[in-house]
Amino acid sequence: MIGLLLANALYFAIGAGLLPLLRIAPDRGSLVERLPLAYPVGVAATGILAAHLALIDVPLGLVELVVLAAVVLFFGLRRVRGSTASTGLLLAEPRWSRLVGGGALVVSLLLLAHAWATYEIRPLLEWDGWAIWGTRSRALYEFGGATGPVFTSDVYLPLQHPLLLPSLDAIDFRAMGSYDPTLVHVQLALLAFGFLLGFVSLLRDRVPLVLVGASALAVLSAEPVLKQLSTGLADVPLAFLVALGLVGTGRWLATDERWALVTGTLFLGAATLAKSEGLFFALAALLALAPFAWERRRELGLAAAAVVAILLPWRLFVSLRDLPLVEYRFRDALSPGYLSDHSDRAGPAVRGLGSELLSGDWGLLVPLFLVAVVAAVLARRYALAGFAVLWTLLAFGGLVLVYWISTIPIDLALVWSGDRTIVTVVVGAAALAPLLAGAAWTSRGEASGTR
Image (cartoon, rainbow, N blue to C red):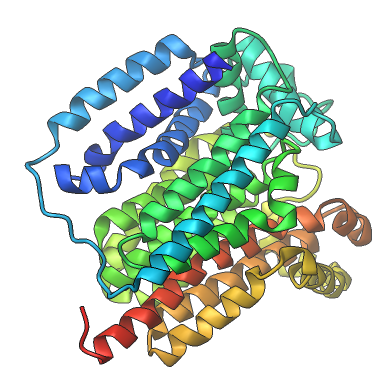
């Protein structure tokens, strides 16, 4: 446990150095305010780096992390400018809002503490958990890179899933000094904690605490989230990364703050390396932004280029080694003939994923999103509401397209994975809810003449 926690402390240090380097927190005031972002930023950045280095058989361990953290912190802190006054909340917030929101965040932390205690003694049980993700994690730990048969032989399938999560697990194993498929589950609880930190940090000065806390609690208490996270699969970590990417880019759309776009872009880029479907979700976010940020298309284009640059090494690795993905091929999604020949799969995919989306297991997440969209529209925040709705539709459509082009019988594919793949759509939409409702709250405050 000590080694695992030390590795995560180094992720935080790396993130703290990256905040000023990436201009997310260019001065002392903003660095103090956004310091909680350091941990999820450090996890995402380290995961991207480790996944890329694995392609050339260069492992990251504790020694390398210490050196990396020292270098990034040194250059990052040198970039910090003098102190700037805190902006604080941009809207009036009553005391009850802070009390209720703070209470919801405390309950969220208690949930994560319970998950921690459970995860640290939970074996790696699920088929995909050990046959795909666990095997890849162990192979990276044992052999240091992704050039061995586990990543290149048809015996180990599917081969085209990216390496961010296995790379982070392999770092943890090196930090712990041994392969431990049970204790490494604590890393999953820490990923959920990182989501909570990033979520609150991205919203705390734009949205009343009651909305932030209630939304965070609604996400973490939804039955599938922590339950599926415990399996060691990449679906929930992917959902967390996409959600933070959406909140960051959504805040940029609402406020034109470049640091929020940079933060969102980093998380969306990391999402493309978390799971194959991450590409669809990140692309959906960029496409959903385009109609509402056309006047800022240069910045949006740079963000899209950054996401592509993050994904490119893995796609080159897959293409050069001709690695098959038995479930589907991306190019089939662009073939009208293929789609026409398999059009009988589209209807069942829509109905199956729709039933998962509207499942009562999600608690208040879907109603929360719908009410927030209505609130934003009534407050005439059309761009933000349009972005949220368009991303949800494109993300859901992207999932339908995956099942449409899949080679697995549609009923079997939905039974195997429908409840997992929909997680990102639900969590991503729910993460935008407080930003949407906060826009309505701000509009009300402006109308009444309050700060």
